[in-house]
Image (cartoon, rainbow, N blue to C red; front, side, top):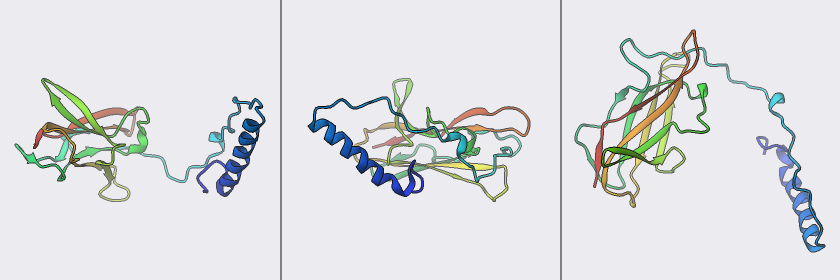
Length: 181
């Protein structure tokens, strides 16, 4: 409850407001609908240090694959496919209007997004080789659902990197294609 607007008193606040609504409905009274909770963004404190910068080894770009799906792979439903990408700290851009992970299916000549990181079957795992390393990795793990259509798929990772000097840059990378039977 400490991460909610009213902390440990959230349940009591909900009960109080639902009682008011129920009473108003029984008595056929109008209820104000334009009441908004207070904006507390300016009062929040951050305990995590900011991202200093992200880097990759020489000759490697953000989004490049570190550990790819084996070439010409075939997977059965219920098994897990994974790929690891050179990545950057997800806190550079939380991608609230996007996604860090996608499973795309080949449809003719086009890759169509089928699953993203809000699906239970697809996991996005971010890691650093050491606590203060500017390098990081993103592993995408897709447990193929039993109801997934057979076809050709690939994994796509998106993110945003922060250079030591300059502004944040977005990147994307894809795994090899693989078949689901």
